[in-house]
Image (spheres, rainbow, N blue to C red):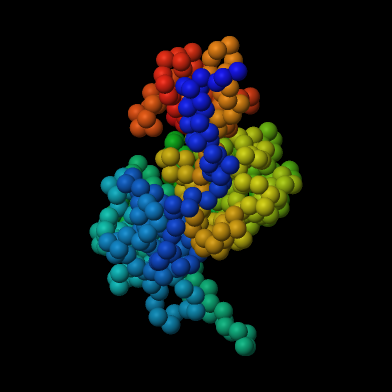
Length: 460
């Protein structure tokens, strides 16, 4: 049977569009268009996204904080640089937390004593160009501890900010390893007014005077504060008193806390028990702190960071090599119930070192930072961008009942638009479908009206 010319041309066009599909990016694949260069020359511990697509990163690298353009190149107009007092310790400066205010100013927390040559201890606020905001006061204090066991010398400093959270856009919660802020006693957590002055309505002895290391600080919509650290996890009322209605007992550290839209709380860290139940390194608790047993995730090693995607899937990064018994190297994605999302990466993919920070871009792409040098086998030290979604694909092209059609497949719950064109420039939407487990079949009853018609499927 002779095949009509218009079908031949449509099929050729489809094949041309489909040819790259074997190499088309999948969720978890590296986005090669983003390549971070200098000054990202050391581990990345925190990532923040600006509304213009630029990326602010902090960590244990030259200057400790930098701003990158959307393609990963350095923004040389960003002037910030932090340092510690020369000779004070053998350790280097680092940024552990970055938060953007609604006005575009940048809060940075970590281990440092100077920003742009001006004294600032562990916390500072930068203007949009990276200059120090001198209207935000000095910082945390602690005590130097030094001891020597020849031939080794050891240094410790209890003046580090590990987490920052904004309240009402301007008030600031800090968590970390410190015992005072601007000479006001506070142990491991403090609330500041918008100018950096300590808010004295927030108590400083929530845990009986014990000096905790607070690694994660997360605000709830009702004004209560979740904190995690070497003490496990606790919830504080707005005045700093411990909320005794929230009971979660974790046997070791909590490094990351994320509140889901439904109020449930995801926690990651280095623990094996939650409220007496075996639960390794990641768990979800209900709004009252009881363990949510419907969340089934477990890892073989520590979880440092968690991020929840808009579709409810959960990204985790850390030191682990197995998730739910399946090989995953330092980064993985979970379904909403904690089962492993096998569409994201595979057993041979991941990083060669721990993933410590995430940032989710509006288009679904995922920025990862940490102490790695390769991602999915490619040399990408410390910072990389991954595709967050697997694009839809077209298959089983043919004519049924004199109508030209094909199957569209992709991830479940993806909203896909099938479009047509005659010139690859102007595209007309034909149908919108939400994908499920089975392929969606599309047929075009008007295909014979065109000498040439091209098709594509794209995510909405």
